[in-house]
Length: 181
Image (cartoon, rainbow, N blue to C red; front, side, top):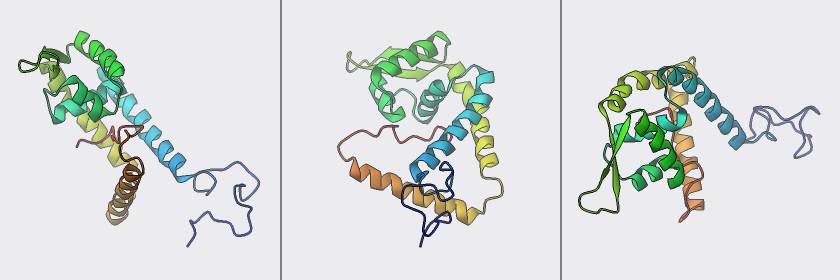
């Protein structure tokens, strides 16, 4: 069975109608389509959270800390899928905005734990509804069964790619910036 855009007789690797590849064409590529969906979600969310003075990078860290406050800086980097120097830069800005505070770990002085401030914690009730709204708008008109199956298929792809990359880190950290774990 071929995807709906498959055009019998079209040369492999060439657009079916002599035009540039577009969404749905085999030449466009599934990963490119997923990337475009992700970017669309990200742009929509960024436009909502920016009015609260939060960037997408900060959103990722806040979301991880709302899930588990007080984790080490290294754990936070891993959960968000960022390199540690990027995390340090983001945390510096978040600390200046009074969203987080760093606390030296009392059991291992080499480690630093990151805690939400009351201000950082309170953003949860403001920002999560923004993400939920974007998800609802994106899924408008789609059947629940289709959404469930799509999520199952995407999870399987993630598992397949994790197996392929076993032992290595994922390029994007495997995190969906729009949902809470």
